[in-house]
Image (cartoon, rainbow, N blue to C red; front, side):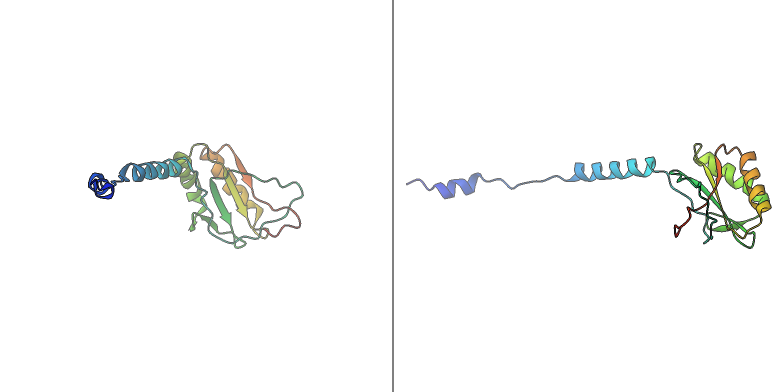
Amino acid sequence: MLNISASRKGRRQPLDLNIAPLIDMVFILLIFFLVTTSFVKESGVDIDRPSAATAAVQEKAAIMIGVTKDNQIYMENRQIDIRAVRANVERALAENPEGTVVIVADKYSRTGVAIEVMDACRMAGAEAVSIAARLPGSSD
């Protein structure tokens, strides 16, 4: 007599699932997203920005420079001197040539310091330099 269940068991081969190509694909996607993402470098300090009725939202700001109410300048979470702004912006623009510069100045900081920072950014080669403001009535 023919035993069907025994013959099925004898022909059954173990299922071998190779996930190496799947892991390779995940790493390739991860590298792709890391390379194509532009990172925003924050100034590193909390600043009370002035409000402006004509403030516009800027989508891409790659380089942020903060000016505190004590007229101290911060870039990438560290305090820098006014003389070092140009070199730091040149380095940041070398990493991201299409980067824009946003100066986030406290509303109680001296205007002269913000102008000096803006001038140093333009001398470093930044074409798009703007000063951050908030819309009236917004909390940030």
